[in-house]
Amino acid sequence: MKRIILVGKPNCGKSLLFNQLTGLRQKVANFPGVTVELKSGQFKEFELVDFPGTYSLHTLSKDEEIAVVKLKEAMQQENTAVVVCVLDATRMERSLVFGLQVQALAKAHDKTVVFVLNMIDEVRRYGFDIDTTQLADELGSPVFALSAKTLIGLSEFQKALPEIARQPEQYRNEQSAIAPENALIVARELSKNHGVNADVVLKKQNRIDSFMLNNVFGGVAFLFIMFFLFQSIFTWATPLMDAVEFAIGELAVWVTGFTGEGMTTDFLSDAIFGGIGSFLVFVPQIMVLTLIIGVLEDSGYLARAALICHKPLSYFGLSGRSFIPYLSGHACAIPAIMAARTIESPRKRLFTMMTIPLMSCSARLPVYALLIAVLIPADATLMGIFNLQGVAFFGLYLFGIVTALLVSFFLHKFTHQHDEKSDMPFILELPTYRLPHWKPLMYRVVNSGLAFIKRAGPVIFWVSVVIWVLGYFPQHGGLENSYLGKIGHFIEPIFEPLGLDWRYGVAILMSFLAREVFVGALGTLFGIEGADENISGLAENIQADGLALGAGIGLLLFYVVALQCVATVAVLRAETGKARIAAGLVVAYGLLAYIIALLAANLIN
Image (cartoon, rainbow, N blue to C red; front, side, top):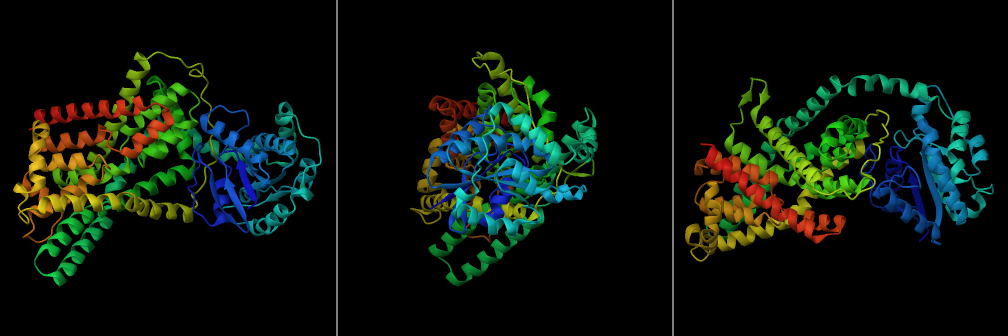
């Protein structure tokens, strides 16, 4: 199958164009380093491949290096028909530097290049237009003006691109290739003759940035936005969580009404609705977290946040670019670790990857939400304004961030520096402020919940079944004397100093497969124990059981610090290239988490 490859610098709208052409809903974000892997989809009879965003063929960061290597490989392959280079029409000069480099590379391999001036709607909003015919003559390649967001000019491009790809030699650049050292000069001249006046475009952006990047107001706004993010996880998601819990309870009553008393009813009530049902209640929080982070990404604020954070992060041996992987780590550590490739310094990149597991990912959300609901009343407030559960949520996330910074500071101060690039200047492009494209954003929100269920659901199902079987037999519901009870009592001495009994010990061990398994495991355990009662919320069952405040807080802090995710360990091994680093983090964070939980259990009454 012939291929069309899509290239461009970050923030040019390349991934959104890819989505529009293929119908896929790939993640689109308004900061560098999101697309660190190749994405492909079907466009007509061609395979369309979305390459990572790149500023230049002369690379600085690891993800750019990967992108350029793959691009050069694609240029050498016969099935590559056309290279589509996406340009930001509002910032033509910056885009064209890379575009001219790609054009020269393509000419060296007899490949055809097509230029796309994206965001033409913004250019016209400022009262400008671009003569694509004249620009195409000067570039020696076809040029299309469109907007992947508003769909202006998209249908014309969709019709023309297959024709070009079927007969690419007819559209090949016949002009002499521009020498790499002259790319900036030529790009600047072309932008001056055909582009938009940069002062006009930047005027509004600079006016907003004068506040958002102010030394005082910018920092206050950043803290407010972060606090709002974590407050919203509880306040916005609560009605949806209540609805899901009510629906699961009603479904359980309805289903078990057909089965009567016996083993089948016990299995459905305890393993299915008690284990898996307890986990599903927290999916709305995952979706709300994705929505808020998605708005920050698409609006262009994250790049500003990285700039705000650069100075304080550099004190801990990190870079302003570490902020983006850190924030991404609150959704999932795996793509966050991969996003650390954007950090130019190998040393700072390593520190970032090693501390990302301390960011509270979405898998911890069900654990936090459950234990906070047990320890703090739902109607409790701080100063009569802020929901106290939301404040506790913010405190847990802040504790993880502070711990990560302290670990990074320790590594920075007490490890030897073998990195020539560590002192490279911090350079970050500030994208234009834009409203999010809501259709792909809402798809990402829904997909985040579905992906979480697909990833964790099968694991939780089998863990719940195994726990139920071990807890139900040999005495059909007598948990204390069951097989699981014997295993739990064997490991209980490890967790007893933390103020936790054997049931929590079993759930903690099970959650090494995936943190969210903790909730399903406890749901099954408490379901078996209360099999003769009506099904109620897991939090209510734990409250009735009398979990001590110190033990509960210690358990929360344990899950903030402990590295209990097999997939994260595997990615750390792959990205660092050293198994001892991944294994060392599991042991070190595990011991640190245990010590913190032990102190909390013994100091808090």
